[in-house]
Length: 140
Image (tube, rainbow, N blue to C red; front, side, top):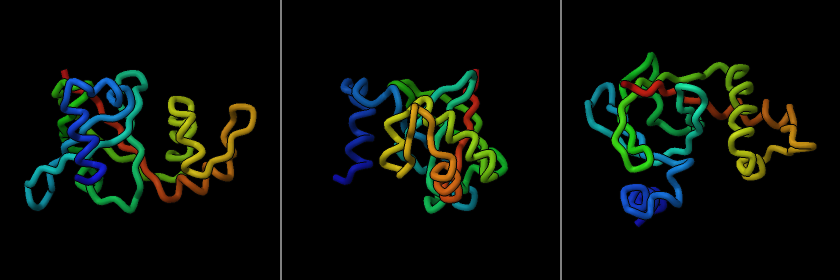
């Protein structure tokens, strides 16, 4: 069992509370194949949206370019939404500050220095080049 399979199993179980406040299962549909892909992703909530940070090296998010419907297992409930990608580096930089406000512990593993609770701007700009955000509006 790999790490994603383990996390997926926990999120589907009664023990989901250990992870559910920051990790969910996201299901996207392949544009060409129609096949569904489910992956655990970190998220934070801001207003009416869920925000997911991912690496540009990953491929699942490419199915969301131009916008697409998605399914999520969120706090062990199946919910639906509409997802769009944010690829612009400057916009990703701005979103990174909000992400780090919600998940300050994520700074160190990403190599972002924090001084007086403020992420280092050069570090954020460097990391933003390799990342993107997925913005999800929940349905209903």
